[in-house]
Amino acid sequence: MSLTFSHVRKQYYDGTHRSRSPEETLQAIEPLMDEIGVVSVEDVTHLDRLGIPCFSVFRPTAAIGAAKHHAGKGKGPVQAKVSAMMEAIERYSGEYRCDFMEYASFEALGIRRALDPADLILPRPLEENEKLHWTPAFDLLNDEEILVPSNAVFHPYDCLGQTVPLFISDTNGLASGNVIEEAVLHALLEVIERDALSRAERRHSMGTRLSVGETGSVREILDLYAGHGIEIHLWLLEGRTGIPTVAAAADDTLTKDPSLLVMGAGTHLDPEIAALRALTEVAQSRASQLQGGRVNPDRQHLLERIGYDRMKRINKEWFCDAPSTPIEGLANLATDYFDEDIGVALDEVGKETERVLVCDLSRTPVPVVRVIVPGFEVSHMNKDRMVKRR
Image 1 (cartoon, rainbow, N blue to C red):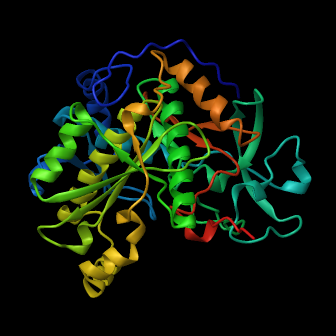
Image 2 (cartoon, rainbow, N blue to C red; image 1 turned 90 degrees about the horizontal axis):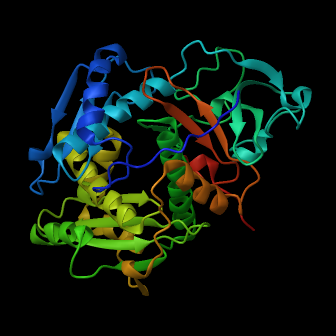
C-alpha cells in the first residue's frame, strides 16, 4: 500500500477545522447510519444544566467488546450530532471484518518487513518465535509499507483462536474525516493527546495551569461553566511535542457528585481549538454520565462508596496549584491546509520516534484510519501498558 496526500484546503474553522461544514457532512453521512447499524441518534443536551450541545448514537450491532453508544459534542447542535455519527462510523470501520492478516512470527518476517512488537509497549514479553497476526501499514516518516501487529489495528481484535493477544485492543488513533487527510491529522493528534495524558498520569503532574483572557470562545465557555457552579481547572500538559494538549478538570460544586468529577482533553495545532475540545469533552462526559448509556456499573458503585471528597483527594493533581501560562502566548501552528498540518505534526512527532504508521480502515465512503506511533504512551487507556522507568 502507499499513501499520497492531496493539498486540501480547510473550509470550516468554528470550533474545529474541517474540509466541509457540519451541515454538508451531515448530509453525506446520514444515509450511512442504517448500513453501519445505528438505530437512534439522540440529542442529550437537555440532560445537563449546561446547555452545551451533546448527542448520543446507539449501535446495538457493535462487535462484542466494542461500545454500543457513541457520544459527540460541539459548539452547535449540528456539530455535536455529526461528531457522534462520525464516531459511530469510525468504530464500525475499526472492527475486524474478515480482513486478511498474515500469520507469522516477528523473527520469520524480519525487521525490514515488520515492526518490532516490543515498540508498542507490551504488558508481557513476547515468546521466541511466537506467531502473531500482521496487517499492512504505511510509514509516513520513511515512505514505505511495513507490517504491524493486527492487535494494534482492529478493535475489538479477534485472534481467531490462533494466537494470544498482545494486549487489550483500544481505539487510540482511530479517526474518521471528510477526506483521508482530515482523518489522518485527527488520528495523529489523538495519539499525541493520549501520550501526553499517559505521561501526566504516570508522573502525577498535570503540567502548568492555562490562563485565558477576558474575551474569545474559550472564555465564553469557561464563563458558562462558572455560571452553573462548575469550577474548571485548565491545564497545559507537558507533552513531548510542541503541539499543545489541553486538559480541563471539572468540579461540580453544586451537586458534589463524585461521578461528575470528570476531565476532558484536546490536542490541536491551534491552542484555542485544543482548549475548546477539552471543554466540550467535559460536557460530553457529563452528558454520558447523566444519560447512563456509557456508564460502567462497577465504576459507578465504586464512586458511590468513595464519595465526593475522597474522589477529589485521589485526583488532587487535577486541582492543585501550579505556575500559569497564558493561552494567548502559545504558538498557533495550524495552517490553512490539512496536508500542511500533517507535515507540521510529523516534524514534531518525528523528533521522538522513527515511524508513524497509518492503516486505512475505510469501509464506507467516509475515510477512516488507524494511526500508530511506536513508543508513544498509551497507559491512559490501558494501565497494563505502562512505561517502565528506573
